[in-house]
Length: 118
Image (cartoon, rainbow, N blue to C red; front, side, top):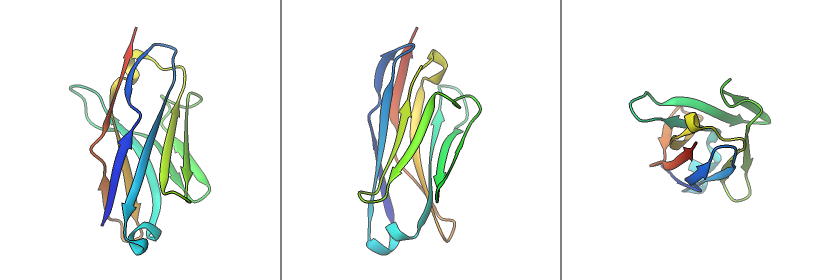
């Protein structure tokens, strides 16, 4: 089992920046079995959507955040980051961290709220 805890959300003005963190914990075997981590978000009244992913040395981004958001992963302390720059009101959402292990089991955090004011 893997537990994920997000942090770093808050209220920011449009054009501002935030850095989200997601710390994974669990047994050594469960942590080592993670091969991909990602960020997703869910705005009020909308479905959860993909934001960015990190797997191996590769990253992938939703078109809506390309050039503004950067995902990174620190394997030493099992932490995933999302640097969000040039934030827009439409980025307002609850941001969730996901980890997928080699058996295709998905783990989710409880989310952190990001509110961007215009």
